[in-house]
Image 1 (cartoon, rainbow, N blue to C red):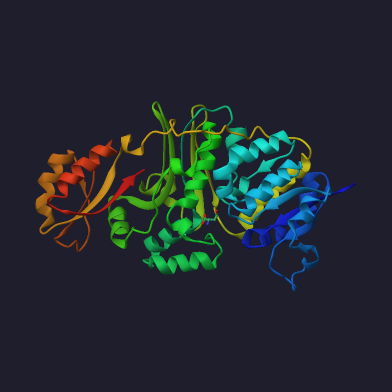
Image 2 (image 1 turned 60 degrees about the vertical axis):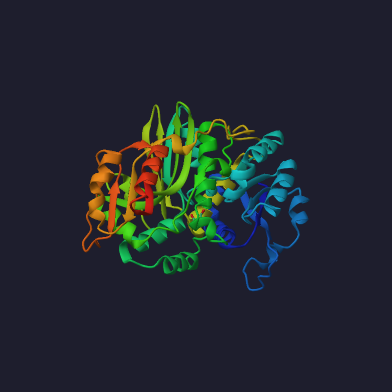
Length: 414
Ligand code: HSE
């Protein structure tokens, strides 16, 4: 039996996890692939003289590209520069590429899928969304019969870890971020996590798969968790909600609405109980109804689990395009609806001297409002939840309110 030779490009957290997992479970991996497999190259510019895999390291991408024995490469380098160039060249040579690189898939997915198809190989990215959670295959295979109505999810482990520490341990934002970095959850540049860009990329991938047109990150309204304070966390809790960074894409009659932002999630919604590094993705299809996917959304071995799963699939189906996985490119965003035109409920926190005296004004502006209680609430603070209204109308009403109060925070509800 010939041995399938693979290459691992990038020996960071996910790359080293992939190599380690591969050798740890090589027996079952080969059994499930139906063939013998080995890692022939590990590409990294750094030296690893003490690594048990030191004989496999190369600094030259050409070694991999020009070796006819290599049929599958795992691109685990991240970023868009070298990763994009290398992936295109590998696919053009008919070598399958598997990746956890959501930035690359979200930006160039349509093109890379097309190149793979043209060259009879595969571009697989199960690890790009939700770490170890199976979501890409279920979306485009098991759920392929459905028209999708909505996808909502906690798509970033780092921010969920931070928010969990803030909610349950009153830990400061900076301390929680440092812990998430130490645990290997965060991106190289953690601002991508904290400011919502990582979750946006993942939402783009899910949305593109579900709705068939490439949703670029700039089509998504994105804001992160930097401005969430322990005050907001406490108000939310008192009202029966947890604050989560939520990626949401909804299919409405007038287009898709795509947002990544913090939201108050009701304790009755299973997403509110998703804590630490865990991610969860809720998918609503017209036939299946609601389906929830849950698991570890970041980290060395959960992500490696998805990468190695893709390697097995690519090896098993070498030389043919196994998947219907594709979406068409989109030249403009005319299928995306402005998020401010959608209806939403909003949590609002304001400051004003004797803030309670504003209640009649707030009620006259919004109609029925839930004022949120808080122990030891200072006299100059008030928090409330609006009824469901078009967001641009809420903004107009808040502009009127801001003549009498300082607007401190507004956070959408899910
Ligand atoms: N930085 C990402 C996260 C890694 O925290 O979710 C997994 O994509």
